[in-house]
Length: 258
Image (tube, rainbow, N blue to C red; front, top):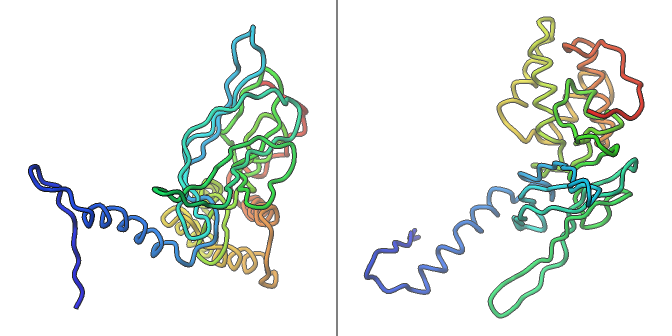
């Protein structure tokens, strides 16, 4: 027979070690059961913004909001951090690097590093977004449609972020919700598209297998693995075949200041 015990911290009672252990173990155990078959990846947060600094100092600063990742069987939390920025007109990838854990007398710790790279993310790094910013511009996140997520300049590209999901990494729920709304606005969308759109709106994150099977079946392709870029390009193609607002000619202008 098992016994479930929830610690009660009443005034006047002696604080017991067992109570603190129960308080420690409950969230850890719950998270491990919830994400036991999930791939390593982003869980929540990590919104990215840019702000121009005062004129005399020059440059700007990129702020990365607090977030959570699932990594090696552990939920790892980060705090908000602001990083000075001067690398205009360059392709910048925002990354979170998680270092191996270490034990002290009182804690199990991991060093975490948020960084801006002029290159792709490496081992033990999670991409949080990418952009190419013109000096004096703002970092835009108000996407007009799915294709707009990859506008070359001054737009935060979220198409490569590896989100944690059951059975494998999946793509950003923001992308899938955008795709779903476009399909729901299309009165001529097929039943398969509507069913998948409702899944995207109601149950993030969508598993990698579900996403791949929908895309391959919808486009009449054999089921196979696809990269994040390939998934994104196929979602754009599906939305463009009947989605609202995707029939417009792609913008070709160069650097823009918004």
